[in-house]
Image (cartoon, rainbow over the protein chains, first blue to last red):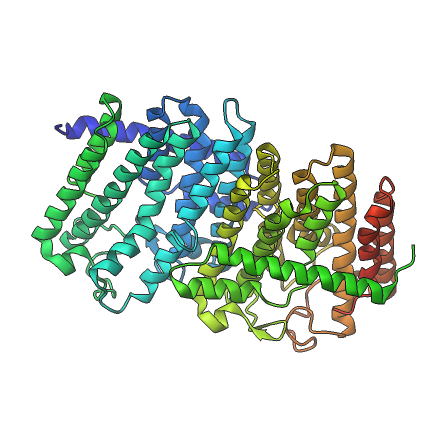
Length: 301
Length: 301
């Protein structure tokens, strides 16, 4: 399969716009008193993000042949969780970042205490939004509970949070390849996997399909991480919210630091091939996921 | 109804012990890699707390005539949420407390970054534990989703977290009575209410019973808060984890600071009467809740 870069970028932009609109609506549903925390929640979520995880949720739902609208709130919840993790990661006690995507981070604008509480509120709100989906037409309670469990496990102490713990521990020391793999798999891979699977589970996909999507998302997370590291080295963009080069974390282990640039590019390309292989059971309905995998090798941010 | 103080204290101690045992088991179920975050989670939860909220969960389940065992994990989840809120409230950017119940707070022992992540992990783990209850015999999926939604709403931006936002805003200024009521109702009242109701909802209690328990828990939260404030003034105990008198927050508005001690005692007593009134529809099976309400007027910590 060939990637038509411009056409695909347009598709991505359309989906990002849909997710942005859904998030605006969703945040209104949990708006209220006191105003400052809800303002901070909107600030943290409406942040110009790529919306990859909610796009995966909606793609999983579509591939299951289900009513994609029933997964709209699930997509929002997943993005709220991603945004909470960014707010907490940016805190002075964590990565101490003052900028994210060129804008002041949440604690710079709202203060540290409110930023901690904003992250807490987005995480809690995500579970409220998911549980409230029980009222939506066509949502099967048992599937929704499985979805909530998958997502909670993916972002909990043995998933995303555990990955951040390892990341902080290994900030000023080189780590070996198995630790690097584990770190990335926990810190970012688990939520990619849970997102794509959650949409599919909610809409009733059977186990073989779920397993295929799980394999795809695992390879996709890897390709995404390696290309992230490569972009970082190439200095093409401010990927992590601070200018490359001004970074005090030069000891941080990355794919290029472990393997060099050429070998890293090869590993990314292998992961993309693994993505394509994992989708063998699907027809053209999975072309968006195929293109998304190919796109990681071309992305500029 | 008379309170037999010693007999009731024994009952409370037995229930606290049951909850402690359940929490130990529950934390084992989400144990794993990396070790430090799970150690910190245990440290934050096995903290000698009174376990009032999980005791309310179990009492709600018992009053519904249901299988109380089916609510065991729910009780644990609620206490994990309470403990996460304490870990985050104690952080330097929040209340900056170094001691809680005479022991060093989580960030003193594990560092600030790990303490933020420990709170996050307990909150996330609580939702994982609740969603996983779907696998337990006798648990009705639709009820469980309602429970998750009630609890998430109670501890979210319009509940406990919102209350903490108001509390921080009003730290160095006097606030009026309506604001004080709103603050306490959001910061502590909502979770008391959700706890008692959640156990009852899970075990199938009908709406009139739930409404009665809601009224009870609302008055109970008020009685608990007023007596907390009174104990603070009387300096009988280190209630909030730091010696009374050494507190820099003397401007904090409390019931005694607004109404004086006598009027505060009367308000507490009125709230306890409201607790008893709200239980009119229940027979002797609600005697534990009646005694618990009366006990707030006698508690020493």
